[in-house]
Image 1 (tube, helix red, strand yellow):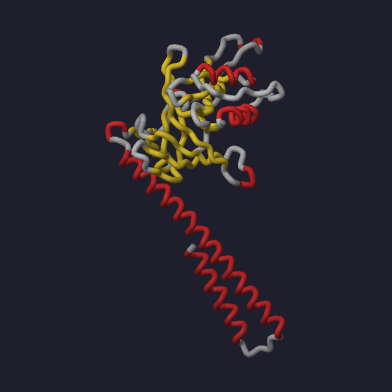
Image 2 (spheres, one colour; image 1 turned 120 degrees about the vertical axis):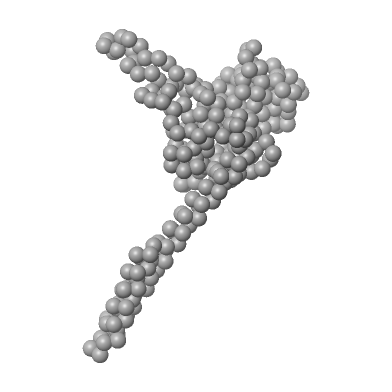
Length: 279
């Protein structure tokens, strides 16, 4: 930024010198020189403004994470450099392998904006980036929900905001405790999406092209309904699957779906849920 300003000053002095010379300059030549000077000044100002904006954003993110670190109890303030457990493994334990900005809502309802995070699904931990190579694992239960500015699809270069909220319930005699994506909210029940990840070990029969020579992390998507009474149920991608799940969690007085409603995708599931759960 300093070099750009110095170059602009040098150009300005040179052009001013040319204009001030007693040699005969046509009006057109003078206009061209002034135009060159204006373009140089304009380009430099844009470059300086962009650098200043980038610095301000970086400082803002750093301040947010520093405040988050203070909120994170000292006992759980663990620095996260690299987990060698996943070295050489195909796939990632994180929701996304990239750092993504998120607005975190703490248990105190304090909101920390634009914090670069990763969600380790396999270990159910949020990791915040302080600076390159210096991250912290957030204390369990510190963040009750967060809005992730997902850049995966980037429609029109704008991030897709996704709400993730922590839920804990018993399912098939096991405690489920994780961050779920909130797809839709009704009066008595919410529709949730959970991405589970598990590691599969390498097989030995790779010479016959019947196995894999590396451990892999595989993802599986599950859908749930969670009622205000604390009950939860898994949802199959079908019309009857949705209605059955709602009945299991005790949501009564709902209007059933007509047979013409098809539920075979996530988008159709959300639409069907909104038809019956928001009434």
